[in-house]
Length: 124
Image (cartoon, rainbow, N blue to C red; front, side, top):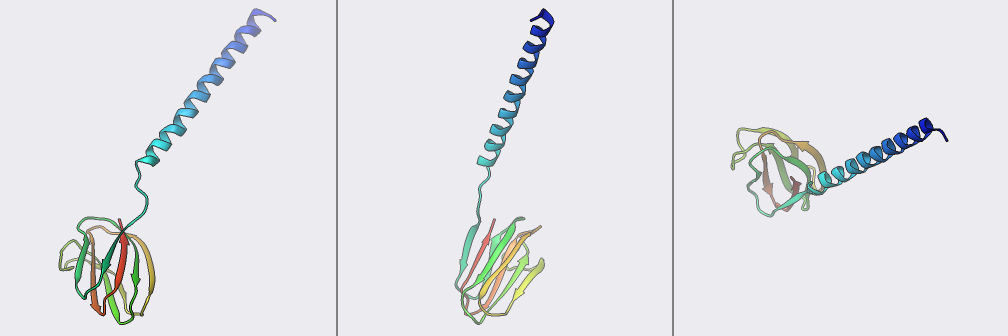
């Protein structure tokens, strides 16, 4: 083997090792970023006819589960404890069921329940 070929092989090997190291570190960096993310949603159970401020800042409304027929639920993007001053995201009056929204709110999450309330809201 000539001296030139030996240097070329050496440089190629060094480049491959550096590339493998860089790519390996990127995977670990992504794993670390994922470890800091808290998966899932927090739930709030509402068992009375009332206004419930779930979150006073922007958040995500995932689902509203109406467990008892005769419950009316209004979901508002509001930060006030009495649920005023915001925008209505949904009005549920159709009986029981799971209603999925996956909606980002700008102000907060406030729920108004009327009737025989038995509602579970998942959010973050």
